[in-house]
Image (cartoon, rainbow, N blue to C red; front, top):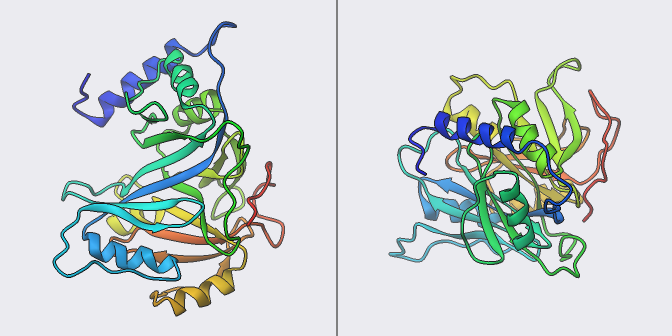
Length: 299
């Protein structure tokens, strides 16, 4: 089935969720969802994107003379990677093109989602894709069943710990991420103590999370959407990360600060205004608005 508009897709998706809102005793059980594997981001110029994102590594890279690639990996280490795809002029609202998660059994997870009426792509045995109720592309990659957590690498290397995107209908998103996939609220808060602008939904079997960015104006411009649709890289020391980024030639327009969630953070913006948030793994004081309800990531 081909959906002509995003509204048609959302309507069909919600009908499927309603039809399969209860699971019988004989239905497939959900395998583990362990954390974020990688993300893909849309950029106007692939080479400019590589120059920006590769500065997160200690050996920044540039396109070779005459290279005309439109997609590839711009940042990678033992924890995961950031992939880039050249965007079309029509790609305006959300440049966070894909968020991918590790699972311990892709075949079983595919079967589980199908049992709940969720349309699933027919990809390789260990990889498949779905779209959430608001159309975000979500992928699942299988890891060995003997593994119980995200692979460990150099503790000083940054790794993706969350991805955030604009959410218009929290109830519909909760039915997908919370009720079906098993995500839970890790923390929530807002610019004011009595408001909720951000909801962190943690994976059921790890410490990474997605972040609902709520209360965003329907008329938000490209710059604001770039702030909202973002990724975050965890680091053990934000000030050490700042110095390393400067050493790598990164252009910083902001200084580290403690966020409302009480974690040190430092924001960078790629050439298309997509925000990349460097964040310490643990809070340094009591957060605003709510307590944490899950384990924090570790180096």
